[in-house]
Image 1 (tube, rainbow over the protein chains, first blue to last red):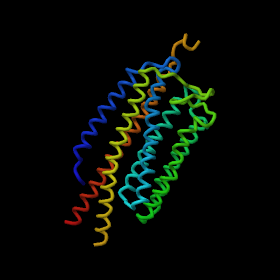
Image 2 (tube, rainbow over the protein chains, first blue to last red):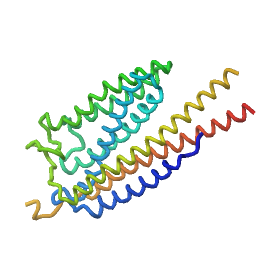
Image 3 (tube, rainbow over the protein chains, first blue to last red):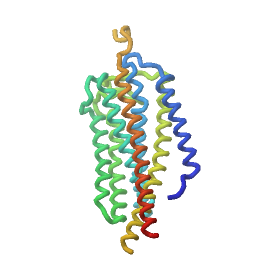
Image 4 (cartoon, each protein chain N blue to C red):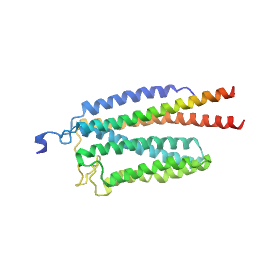
Length: 233
Length: 51
């Protein structure tokens, strides 16, 4: 196992510092929303978690394209670890949204187009992780993962656009709201600062986790290789 | 009318929301650490076998 690179150590501290600032902005700098009250603060990290999910699945699709074009297995590792992080953050997005919805929509869950497409997207990528494990041959596994990652990515813009295409009660943060949307609010400049800083913060969190998870994957493959050698001797 | 009454009391939901968000991120970091440690143990066993 290679020692942790200095840049990664710096990134760890930087991400921690940026995260602390984001928490300050969310809890103390951004004002309390006039109608929804304190629960509206969940919105900043709820959207940021959704953003990380979409970004992670985009990276998976791009890595898949590189695998197919060059046959480079290192990018298959990137695709795999990015899906794992994307699944975690999409889960955070869905569950925190349900908690916000309880006092605002008076229900934990409704089969609204946004909630439905987000859930389908999550299930598509959970299936990616499960199906990969069933393929022994590394070449076939990498090709399967690449094609799945590219085709599965269709679910990401569909989820993003669902509240803009279909009639929905889910608020639209950027752009015009559906008149039937419930829980909408106008962001003040301070709220906008907290919102965009949260997006940047979660991008840092994603980059840091991706790097650590890639190192873990390299270590795992190294150990598996050594185990195979030990069995064959 | 709502504005006259002030914001709704939703602090419990906010606490629940942040517990889920921060708790899940913390759990994921712990899972990475545990997996690292398990592979280090495997590595130590492999080193012992090879010696």
